[in-house]
Image (tube, rainbow, N blue to C red; front, side):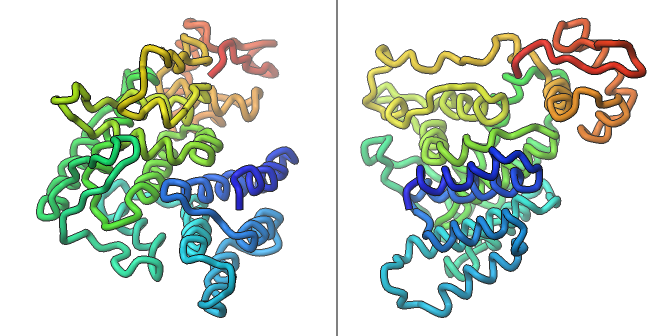
Amino acid sequence: MSYNSWNLELNEYIRQGEPDKVEKSNAWKTAIGLQDVDGLKPSKYLIETAKDHIEGKISISEADRLISSYYKEGRDRDGVEADTKEADIVSVRITKLLGEKTFQFSPVELQNIHRKLFEGVLHYAGRIRDYNITKNEWVLKGDTVLYASFYSIRATLDYDFSQEKNFSYRGLNIHEAIRHFAKFTSGIWQIHPFGEGNTRSTAVFIIKYLKTFRLTISNDTFAQNSWYFRNALVRANYNNLRAGIHATSEFLELFFENLLMDAKHDLKNRYMHIDFDRQSANNSVSKCQNGTLEISLEELAIINALKTNSALTQKQISELVGKSERTIKRCTVEMQEKGLIARENGKRNGKWKILIEA
């Protein structure tokens, strides 16, 4: 089933504007879009099941059971390829995970995500690989990234997670934070702890991790650009000094700017190909406001909260973004001084006005 077809069908629920339907539709779009990292396409049956879930006719657990039963009852189902089966099963599981309000920042969480996504699909679901791998990449003209040796996977994961856990985002503007998010993401992806399914597992983990910062995620970024995400991870981990090619996180940072800031970078896979003429491709001029890059993560979370309701009190903002009321009071004062927001019609009955595009 083509991207335009299922995307148009699910977008209809977003246009209707009902919060519950919008949230469900966005989760499905992300889940189905992520299958494109391995060139997998969903079936029409999955889309119909997704629509029933979005409309409230069935729960996500019922959707999961329906998809599983669909393939158990028809192992030799005519016209259904193994890749479509994988796309359907993993899509409903990603949707289920994205809807869960649980998360633990640890390598075990990443391992559990892989197990939950691929149980019954891959025989090694949730298991750390015990062999070395290479993968021919189109973006590298058939060359491969150097992935972690299997005997160092656990130690390397533990190190990367420990470094990230001890890192403080306090005082960073959003561009600096994105640069660090990109570095952490490319690092755990390069380890490639599993035989297959690493990109989809990493994506789900990162989405859930970013949500702990109360960041609003652009739902079309993964839905439309999941293969770009994978190629950007490849380029962030590839060096070929003889050919004058160096690892760069610039493409991954553009992806995260679209994801977290609703920037409008033109995310084209051909721009990342190692033979692409960079001089002719000044394509990545952000269409978001320059000032947005100076916003801290706390300030961006507050702005995203105010977008949902401009009449929020400081107490309500604190509950939404997970910060103390004292912190919110300090931040809103500073944001008014910086010209990011303004208070209209007084403290008691007034509203907040966002003065920038973010």
